[in-house]
Length: 324
Image (tube, rainbow, N blue to C red):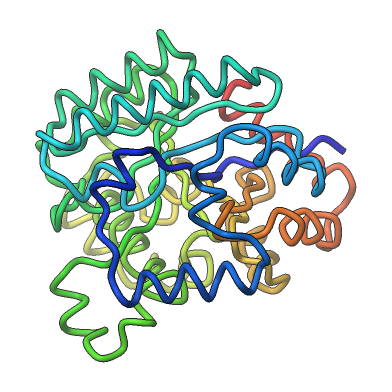
């Protein structure tokens, strides 16, 4: 069975220089790496033989690579623009070196939305990338703000999806909900809360009315949304109509949202996601190197689906939605 993984990260020298360490980040990286048996920072920095060896050992044929969180979104334009350019050019060279094993999602300097739209077009048209990954809010500003809509407009025009990836929650949320409990603010809980709320802001702002063919990808089996989709729709339909939205929230979920398996290896959550969204909208991903390739592939092989649906999740859906 062919396996394509689409949320697989890398970092650059500029990332290493600019992204500051702290007690909670260091503890997470060290403890998580020890649990999986590999050095996360080392593997994040490799776009060659070590990465390929880990892919081969697990049976992953192709990775769609993306710049690591917090990405360019943590910086103002003076840093974000050269950081995105460096990441995208570095990724292009990796794809050129291993064209049968790697594809790319663009990093975008969202601090300058016009420049971000231009960089997306460069990456798709000139570098052959398959979409973009955006790491949450831009220094506390969410992408429902009108100034960011040129990015959505360009993505729809190019026919590529945007992967909305987690980052640390908004600073106000950190203070209100996670002060003293910072270990909950990352992958265990805070990432999902911030990303799901961010996506809902995009829905209720009317982005999908303006750009109805746009697709947004959420990882980790939808950041908790499949479990809550029906209740959310039931209790916000009137509010959506009052805002002037043309469709119900549930219709936007089913028409504009894709989800991946990344880092959520739990059969009940998977079955909920399939029931809520349908198997055609679920793509395989690992979240390397923050998750183990072998764990992801073993999960893929064991989930309770037909062989035909397993093939869709493993590679056919990615081939369709990303035009691979």
